[in-house]
Length: 161
Ligand SMILES: Cc1cc2nc3c(=O)[nH]c(=O)nc-3n(C[C@H](O)[C@H](O)[C@H](O)COP(=O)(O)O)c2cc1C
Image 1 (cartoon, helix red, strand yellow):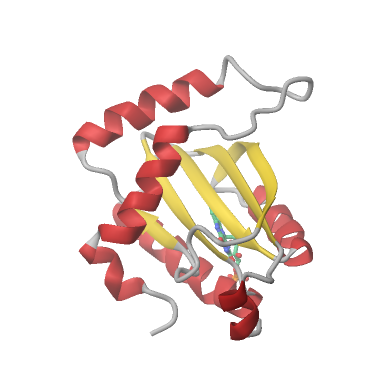
Image 2 (tube, protein in one colour; image 1 turned 30 degrees about the vertical axis):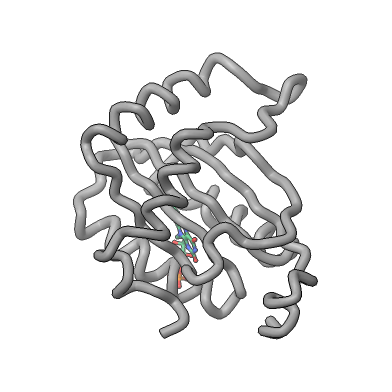
C-alpha cells in the first residue's frame, strides 16, 4: 500500500469484527503462535487488526482491502481451532483503527475483562440478519483500541519496525 495514500486518508478500508468460540481452551503459547502466524501473513496482505481472547471467546478486528479480507475470513472460518464465527460488524472506514499492527494481541486487565465478558454475553440476544448490529461491543472495541495505544508490552510486536 502506498504510504502517501495512508497519510492523506485516501484509502478505502473494509473493517470486519467477529466473535468466535475456541474449540478448547487456548494456552498462552497457542495464542502467541497463532498471532505470530497472523502477523506474518497479514503484513504481506496489508491487513491490520487486533485479537482478543477471553474465556474461550475470540474477538478479532480485521482491516484491509476488500478482496484480501474476504479471502482471509474464509481461511479463518475454516480453522479447526474455533467455531461459531459471527460477524458483528462489516463496514467501510476512511482510517484504520489499528494501522500500525498486523495483528495486535490485546490482554485486558481483570476489571476490563468482566465488562468485556458481560458485553460478549449480551451479543447472543441482539442482532441477526434482520437487525444487524451497527457497532457492537462498544466497550470491548474501545478497550482494544485503548490497549493498542497504551500497552507497553505490545510495542515489541509493532508491525512496522
Ligand atoms: C481466531 C483466529 C484468528 C486468526 N487470525 C488470523 C489472521 O489475522 N491472519 C492469518 O493469516 N491467519 C489467522 N488465523 C490463522 C488461519 O486460520 C490459518 O491457520 C493461517 O492463516 C494459516 O497460515 P499459514 O498457511 O501461513 O500456516 C487465525 C486463526 C484463528 C483461530
